[in-house]
Length: 294
Image (cartoon, rainbow, N blue to C red):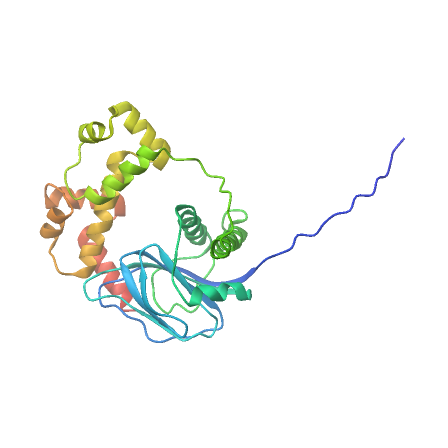
């Protein structure tokens, strides 16, 4: 005997929808770089990954610091300027979303949490699997899609952007959000802070073990479990990121930059730089300058 029971299905209520996307850029600007005033029919997310910039718009004109974002409204006149002595890295995403609740982010910068920064990183990664390079050429009016890309990658960009915006809006409404993330040990967070503040010096694993009351095996295993990489790799990435910023500022030569970020020689610096960036320091700055001149 088959019993035909009638269930009532419920529709999902969409709080907001990202309906279209124009571009996904990651720019490594030189100091004093600026854009002309622009306007377009879609919103524009502006996030500062390192350094800071001066953003000018109809609803906000002022500094946007590292780890902060603003979202310009559709048809809003806006521009950006890099400071005289700072080379900034910036993410720019042009997209269409008609939800008026996003308008609040055009009037003041919003600082992202670690979880929100991770979401933004995932959006950039999905974007690179969907769109063809270059990703750092200003005024690129038609960013082409690849003919083939991983299953669902296009939709993942949309879903992750919607998730990010919903979380940001929840934060502004002071709603407690349960985050399904692994709890990082407080001591690992202290080590992160120590490395971020002292990476320019010579840091030894034995020193870290002494400072934080642990042994090398526990330190290395716990750090890799938390960050997905070794302590040395994490330190080298901090050094390379700072070196790239100094190169874009153009005030120091490579030997001076190498010493400033804590490498024992310019030759060792160049070898590590090429290992992480797949190009020499000289080619890096040449490439950055040539792309910004297009």
